[in-house]
Image (cartoon, rainbow, N blue to C red; front, side, top):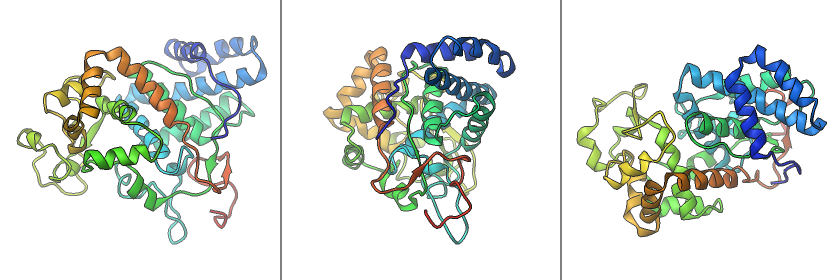
Length: 334
C-alpha cells in the first residue's frame, strides 16, 4: 500500500492514550492544543486525529466493553477482503449496489459502524482541515481497542485511502469461517501474505471475542467437545441475539487465556480448536500461552502487517467525507 511517509511513534501513541484516559472530550481540547503548538503541522494533525479517534473509542468501550472486540473484528473483516480500504463500511443501495456489510459473514454480525461514523465527525470538529480516510480510522480504532482492553499499543501508519466499491462475494470467499479446517484457514491467511504463526497470533483476538448462539447451534461451527456444555437452547431462530464468550476465563481482557482454552480442548469454535491439530500451529499456541508478552508483541506485529494489505489493483480510491457512502451523488463509478 502506498502510505504517506509519516510513521507514528509508539511514544506518540502512548501520549495520546494518556491524554484520553485523563480528560473528557471538552477538557482535552486545550491540552491537545498545547501539545500541537510544539510540533510540526503534519505531526500536530496526526496527533489530533489520534486523540479524536481515541476519545470516541474510549467512550464507546466505557459504555459497552464488548465494543472493543467488535472494532477489532471490524478492522479484520475490512482488511481481509481486498485490503484495508474501508469497503466494509459502505451501505447497500437497493437495486444498484450490494457491498460487504450485508454479505452473510458480516450481516447482523459485524458491528461498530456507528463508532467509526462518530470518530469521523469528531475529527471534523477537533481537527479542522485534517484529511483522514475511513480506512485509517478503522486501523486506529482497532489499535485503541486492543490497548484499552489490556493489550499493548502499537504504531499505526496513516495514509490509506477508501475504495469506491466493495466486494459482497469476496466477503464470502476470503474471510475465514468458523467451520474452516486448518488447511483452509492456512490457505486464506497465506493468500494475504500471512504465515501460520501470524495466523495464530491474529486469531488470539478471540480472547475478547464472542460467538452468537445462532452460529454455535450449527454443528459445523462448534468444537464437538464443547457441545454438551453449550447453553444456547439449540436450535435457535436466526434473530437470536444471545452470545457466548470465546475466552472462558477472562472474556473482557486482552490476554493469553484463549490459548489456554485451546490447550485444554475447550476452544469453542471448530476453527479455533483445529489449531491444536498440527504441530505447526499447536506449538505456537503453547508458546503464546507460556509467554504472554511474546503473544502481545507478535499480535501487534501481525496487526501492523495486516493493516498494510493494499486495495485491489485498479480500484478507484478517495478519502470519503461520510464513511458509509462514496463522495458525490453518483454511484456509477463504483
